Image (cartoon, rainbow, N blue to C red; front, side, top):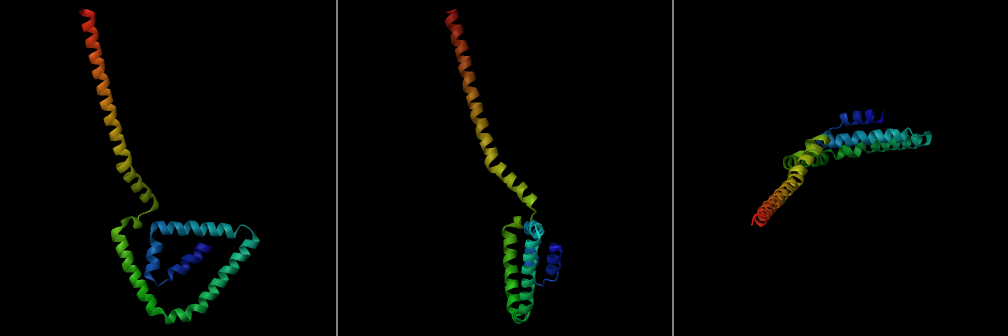
Length: 153
């Protein structure tokens, strides 16, 4: 229920920056987890529910009282929103990972780790193993040849 009221509030939100940031899959998933945890905490018992409901009502009342001030600051707020969006554009350009889902981030991290850590380590291990095997076989061949030489000689 809380998430629904939050979504309704955000759907009326006019600031592009907040809409873009909450649209990032990682942020969106964090909001979902947080609101679910909040709802569970709120439903834990009557006292917690009463306390959190009172806090919510207080915040909503304060937001209503602040609306005239926010209306007067609309132009500077829009300028800050616009600048924040320019910054988001730069972040998205330099770090495209921010637009990916958590699962995609984990997969890409795993691939990067494998390519930069695991595969080079395995290559070094296999090179050392091949070198050691080559030396053991050389010793074996030498020992067999020497043994035949001593036995026949």
